Amino acid sequence: MRVPLPAVRVPLPALLCCSAASLLLLLLRWRRRRGLWQKVKEAQRRQERSLVRMEKAVQRFREQHPSVNTVSILSLPLPELSKKLQDGSLPPEHVFYAYVSKALQIATETNCITEYLEESETQLPKAKLADKLGLLYGVPVSIKDSIDCQGHDSTLGFIKNLNKPAAEDSVVVQVLRRQGAIPFVKTNVPQSLISYDCKNLIFGQTFNPLLYTRSPGGSSGGEGALVGGGGSILGFGTDVGGSLRFPAAFCGICALKPTGNRLSKKGIISGVLGQKAVVAAVGPMAKDVESLALCMRALLCEDMFSLDSTVPPLPFNEEVYSSTQPLRIGYYETDFFTMPSPAMRRAVREMKQMLEDAGHTLVPFELMNVDYVIFNFCVRGMFADGGASFLRKFKGELEKSSMGLFFWLAKSPNWLKSVLSWIAKPFVPRFSGILRSMRANTVDEVWSLHHEIEEFCHQFIAQWKKLNLDVMLCPMLGPALRIGYPGKLSVAVSYTMLYNTLDFPVGVVPVTEVTDKDEEELKSYQGYFQDWWDRTLAKAFHGSVGLPVAVQCVALPWQEELCLRFMKEVEMLALKKNSLF
Image (cartoon, rainbow, N blue to C red):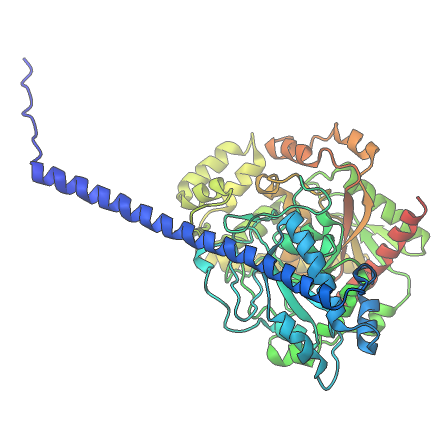
């Protein structure tokens, strides 16, 4: 016989108290979220006001100077433009407002600008008063959101960083100003910077100026779109896994990722603070290689070395850059981790042949264990605490971007990651690798990892020197992926992230475009793992006829001038070939 349990009666006052507490918590949460949305809306209104101010500034200039031919100004490459500014044949005001006008147009089309630096208008007359004109005198330059400019936010796409203007310019911006350059806009980034797309809740999605359904790349995507669209002649971004190189390749321009400490990173906000396994760098983006070289000449000056004494005092080596000696060039068509698109493979093959025809020696280079490098050095190195510190960046934000899987992994205990990695290994080896690399490490394990990375770097250099190489020719992921796809394809950073781990200088140069034949061959693309990521990458590449495809040009650490010299050779051969068709 069942004995009925006595009914539990909750006293009415206690019930009312619990209900009131729950309601209060809901109200407080609603109020907090409402406050965050108000901050977002205000930031968006500021962005709109910036564009209105740009429009008014251009209108005033046109009324005062109706005969200025802005089209001819915009057509000048940076070295020629700089020469005309230096000799006084072109007034800096004409150049400045020509680019403000073009930048406004590109911003309207691609949503690449987050803020107009209105004080740039007052910097123009100050630049004229300098005792000696800098190498970049009168040149308008654009700056990535994460690079501090005094009086302006560096948001990284986070609401918590709004209304926190930088107290001073980053060292790079200070040196640019001393060289006569005029920073005039800040540009959009993906939330947290750890992405090669360009979208955040505050400023929205940035589009590729070549095809609006494509991503401009990231995380320096606003820079890529603005420079690629012709709205800036020289831009500055950062790179911790390809963040300069993806936008350059996707938008059909050139970029240089220097050795990590060749240019100062003081005053530049990192996506993952403190990690040393994957080395970040700041570098320039422009339409051509000579513009990048001029920029590096200007930045590698006494001001750079005195403002940041951690930067080695290595001025630009003109002799290396200007050399015409034949090069011994290593090359590879694939890393056997991310299968190259047909256009990527063809770009390397054709450039290899052109370089040989030009008198250079090309030597095959064999990459080994790239999957181990990506998972054990790159992913594990960046998130050595299991992603806990990175996860904290998103605390209190309205949106967690498209990183649901990452957040789940970061919150999961080590034992669960290990078990799931073991289960997944026979079926989805790359997912198993990610699970394994996202474990939280002890201090001893982190030190061992850093030692292992050092040993890998020495081995890579030994292989390089055994072949007596000067530089290396490598594939670059491309063409530009469809919008929304980079967030699904974080594994496809293998071609770029390798050289952040090694801390080698790397440049990107566009060399060809996707052809109908490339598109046809893409139909048989399967990938090396034939998993979900491989199938998704094929979809992301699809429908790209006419879009640019680039290659990477690599040199050993601290040899930026040799890297640029090689880039110039690649660019010249590509232009020569394209002019024949």
